[in-house]
Length: 519
Image (tube, rainbow, N blue to C red):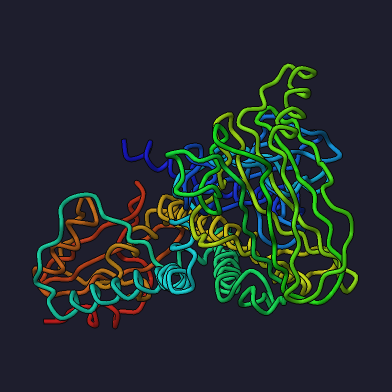
């Protein structure tokens, strides 16, 4: 069972290392990316804190969940394609009532969702934070030294208390740092330690700051905003207190007496403004209807646009008859586009048109209207590491560092397991690894006249005798045979590696025999 678990660990470590390497290559080459979800726009498919891996595809189709940069900036949206084509897709969050303003083309899409790990984004952020990475690197790099220190302490205790009884079972093989540094494991150990250090350094850099360099701290510094409001005449009825309905109240169409007027107040540099209504349906149909032409507008200037709900609904119904798709509910976005200082600013008032009412798509945070701020400053650039033609962004470096750290840790565990299983290769080396603290290397010792020689069956017996009488084990090598002896009074206890038995009267220094007695 233990061997099976070791094999499974080795296979798991190898698979993790290969997976980490492939993921690193894909992320670094830009063919894949990792997105950590935020908000509730894709509930119940994804929830906040989920991790989703996306990969580039040759073509994208209706129903695919894709990631793209919002307004061409650094913010990433992960929503579903509901219509359009490669020249411009219509995209919508499953939990949103309206479609996205952007219509990214196929070459603007980062990739299609291929892997979903619930709540892994939250765990990944915690595991790859700088304190955790530093602690993991310290623990892994210091593991071998800790084992070696423990072994030295055990040896010291054995030297000061040699009367302890030895275990009679099979000798254990503690893993020491020198085993990891022996050939051929030396190169593997060095490689895994370098990988650990590099992945820890990469994670510390990726999590030490925001993913964007010099990102704006607030929308107010961007210098443009717009307030929306709407109103419409209604017939006297219990539905309203008066004959006018104003934002943010819904407009009930059964008592509507005219068109809905949308007013907007612009704050920013002077320019020209034109308004349009963008219609979109759940089946993927969308259309843009111009409402007003370009008109001069300055800071604090106002504009108006009229929404004829019956005309908008008739346009959608005609499209439904032609396409055979449903247009209910119909998403209506009133978009005034302000052209100033060579750039366009196009916020949107998002409404939902149903057979019985017109209402705000997102009523939260609204008082008398909707305020939107637009990017007048250049989009923030993502922090990245450049190495020649290769570039790695901070957002991609975060999961990459975590995967590389896990793969390197598993690889180091596999190397340690291999070193433990490999152990000393011959019997003499195993004996020294287990009982080296009791042994003294000497020159071959001749047999003393009148001293009896007793051959013991195993080295454990000889070691028990040495500890019992407080003696040291004398050892030497000759003709490929390792000899271990313990001299006690008039008896020499001896153990030899292998089956060969060589007479004890081998040539050697007699002083070694006298030096072996410690009593």
